[in-house]
Amino acid sequence: MLERTANRVRAAAGPAVLGGAFKRFVSASDRSRGVYPALGELAARWRETSPPRGLTAHELRVFSQNGEDGVLAEVFRRIGIGGGGFVEFGASDGAEGNAAFLAQVLGWPGTLLEADEAAFAALERRYAGSPAVRTVRAAVEPGTVEALFDRAGVPEEPDLLSIDVDGADYWIWEAIVGHRPRVVVVEYNGDLDPREPRVLPYAKGRRWDHTSGYGASLAALEALGAQKGYRLVHSELAGVNAFFVREDLAGPLPAGDDVPRRTASHSLLGHGHPPPRRAPAWHAPRPDGTPARRDPR
Image 1 (cartoon, rainbow, N blue to C red):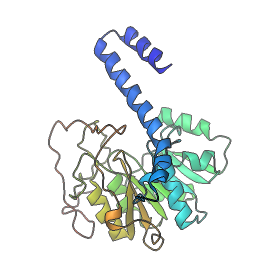
Image 2 (cartoon, rainbow, N blue to C red; image 1 turned 120 degrees about the horizontal axis):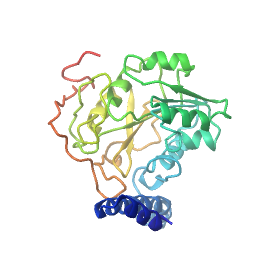
Image 3 (cartoon, rainbow, N blue to C red; image 1 turned 60 degrees about the vertical axis):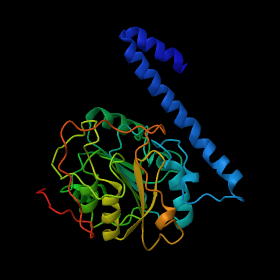
Image 4 (tube, helix red, strand yellow; image 1 turned 90 degrees about the horizontal axis):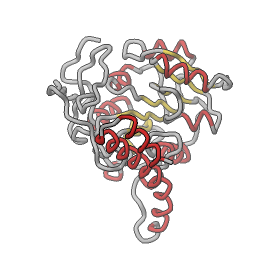
């Protein structure tokens, strides 16, 4: 089926290079879909002789982009559920995301925010019959995030906050002070050295240009999380999302060297984003998580 689709697209588009690129994309997607279900089985075979460290063996992909579904299941198995539901942005059309399984299978209440008109229309349609799930069309910015939460009725302590806006993720999390999620999943820039704190200055309305010149490094988010009272417990195999758990709950979860700090490996093939057209003006956060120079919001 996938091979036939690739051939049809190649024939319709003409250039052989397009067909090759599409086939590589299909192959990569197919590969990651196959790897995740096997992780737990293979890890179990090693459990007695070489027990897996950290949460990597729990990665599993159902509705998430990578292995986030399985990691969240294990995190909440260990820390429990508080009943505060979820908040996720940008949620796109709802077909893929960190809260999709929670909403569609487990029936969790929550709020999904998306700015794009077409994607939001699909998101709203998907959850039209789910009164526990609120869909909000809005562009989330540091200066508006708390007001959006209040307007949507987000509780002070949601179980899960998932931040994926392709750029201002660091600044949005920094701005959330009136809500204390139990678990935070936030996208980081895996093309940056995960040991070096780097963050791109905030600029309202900045859009991702599909290069590696965006967002913040894992180290920058780790410093911010520590300042806010959160511990880094995992970064997933694809090097895209970092998992933080509030310190008062994080006891049964990995710490220190048991937490992998991964670089980008999109589709689990070691791929990253192409370099930016111009060198970004990265800032280095201080130990307390704040950047060396704070740009106007």
